[in-house]
Image (cartoon, rainbow, N blue to C red; front, top):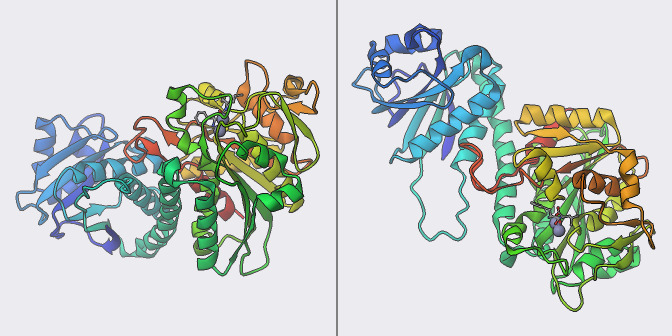
Length: 496
Ligand code: BES
Ligand code: ZN
Ligand code: ZN
C-alpha cells in the first residue's frame, strides 16, 4: 500500500472510499464545525444517515454511507474521533487504524482520507495517522499460504496547501518509525524453529552491511569464554544453539552530543531450562528476544532518522533449554565483572545474560544505558499486559524515557528500585542469587541488574507484558508481537 500526501478538500476525490473523521458533539452531529463543513459538501446526507444510524462520532465509531454522487468517491466512511477537546494523537492513531480495519473488510483498492485532528500539529497528525494505518495493516504472513488482497493507494488529504510540507515531513519520519516497529514484529513473531541466536546475529550483520554509519562486532562462545561472560554461557549450555554477544555502533555524521547504549535480552526461546515452565507459560516464549529485537529495530532505521547521538546497540542472545548439559538450580557462576551468582532458578535466565551485556555496555563509557527485556511475569502481574515497567538509578533518565514513551504512544510506568529489597537477592554461598522472594519480582530483577552498571545512568524497561499481545489490544496492536519499545527509543534518541 502506497500512502501519499495530497492537497485536496476531498470532495472531488474519485477513489473507492472517502474517509471523514467526525468529532463527537453533545447536541447534534451537524453542529460540530468540521462535520458541518463536510455536511454541506454532502448536501445534508450525512446528517440524515447519522441520525438514522445513531452515529454520534464517539471515538472509533464507524459508519458506512453511499456517497450518492454528493462526493465523487463510491463510498463514504465516517470515523468517530470523540470529543474535540479530548482528541489526542493517540485518538488519531486509533481512529486511522479503525478506518483501515473497516476498509480491509471490503475489496477497496483506493482510499482518500482528510487528515484527522484539526487543531493539533500537522506534522504530528500525519505521523500518527501513518502509524495507525500501517501498524493496523500488518499481518505476519510468513507461514500463511493464502495471501490477502491489498489496498493499493491511501491518500491523506491536506486542505490547506501551506500544511503540505509539514505533513510530508511527518510522513517521512512515521514511515521509519513504522519500519522499525514492523521489523521487530516480524522477528518476534518468528518461532524458535526459525529464530535461533544465529539469526539475530545475521540480522545485525545485514543491517551493518547496508548502512555505512553502522559497524558490528560479534562475540562467539570462544570469545565469550575469554571475556568471562559466565552469565551468557551458563544459560546457553543446555541448548544445541551457540550463544552470542552482539555490539552494533551507530556514529552520526556530525560530532555526537551524547553516547547512548541500548541493551537487549535476546532469549530466542525460553523453556525455563531445568526449572521448566508449565506448558501454558511456555507457549509464547518465542517472544523472549523482544528486547534484542527492539535494539535491532532501532538500528534498522537509525541511519535514516540520523539522531545526533552515538548509539551502541548491544544484545546477548541464547536459547534456554533443559538437557544433561544444562545449568542446574544451585550452580554458582561468574559474570564478566567477576561477581558470582547463585542460579537458584534457571528460568530467571534473562538477568544472567543481561548482567554480562550490561558489564560490557558499562565498559563503553556511555552517558546512559537503557536495557529492554521481557524480564519478569511479575511485571505483568503488577502493570498488566499493556504497560512496561521502567526502573532507573537516574530520575532524569527515567523521566526522559517516560516523556518519549508518552509521545510515542507506548504505555510505560515507573517502578522503584527499592534499596531495602536488595537483601532479598543477597547470596548465601555466592555474591547474589538470581531470584528474590515471593513478592516484588519485577523490582528484585531490576535490583539484580543494577549490580552490573556501576554508577552509569541506567534505565531498565521490563517489556514482558506489552511486547507480545495474547489478545487484541486495539485496532493497531493485534494478537502477537507488537514491536513495543522501538518508537519510544527512537523518540528518545531524537530528543537530543
Ligand atoms: N521470559 C520470562 C518472563 C516473561 C513472562 C516474559 C511472561 C514474557 C511474559 C523470564 O525469563 C522468566 O521466566 N521469569 C521468571 C522469573 C522467576 C523465575 C524469578 C518469572 O517471571 O516467572
Ligand atoms: Zn525464564
Ligand atoms: Zn526469559
